[in-house]
Image (cartoon, rainbow, N blue to C red; front, top):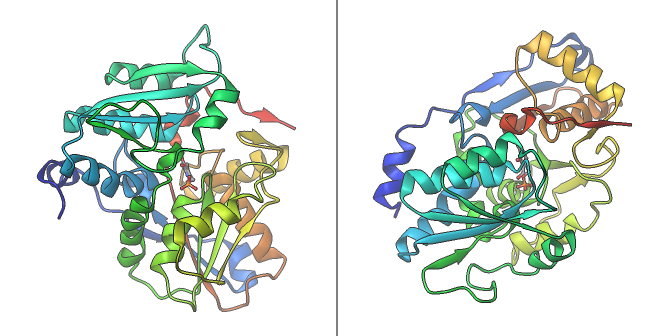
Length: 306
Ligand SMILES: Cc1ncc(COP(=O)(O)O)c(C=O)c1O
């Protein structure tokens, strides 16, 4: 059962419409591409953030936890959404933030501090160590009432919220696509779909072959073979860009009037266009891609271009 505080919060959210991408390139390839606009759900807890947090927060509230502790980078969409949700729900939030404290805080960190999140800058080494703690009660030295939330909301409970994306799609489709950070959203799509749907994840970071195991762990004990993660569309690494990616974003945004973040959704759509043009999606197929939001992270982010 959804905790009443979450029901109240969710009442302030907007629907996530689905929208066909109208483009002659797609028409020539005979492929339909639709976008599920989760970016429009809420100005702060947008995209997959709400989907992933919803049942985790529900678990914490039902267990009468008072504090959620998590981790993320200085532009983390996850920490941004968590701090905001925590404030709305009367929960204390704390976070380990990767790297040294910068002289000038990112807009993301300024927001989370304003919403009351307590932040601790930690070394990259310590940050990596934190990734081993996967259960809500597994972080050492937790005190009663403190709830540990792994990076990016990577918890099996997150899959339940992602399931709701799938149940909301009002059209028939052959494939689902989503950008991949921790693989949690992808795992949720896999778990919620039947074996006939092809599910494609597009990794936002370089050298992300380990994600296969992370996704398998999240969907266990179920085993499915109808999914894959494309590893070669990272554009040089996490938050990096290439001139080709920037040109794609400019053209897509101008034509479709749909804003894209460079870190996740731009790479996902660039990859889909590339694969469609290579004929890797059969003519007549319909793809639904999930727009996972993330636009807050673009404020003053200077993405590196290779
Ligand atoms: C905007 C956006 N899209 C996609 C993702 C990837 O989601 P996941 O970590 O569930 O793979 C993230 C990161 O969580 C994100 O912030």
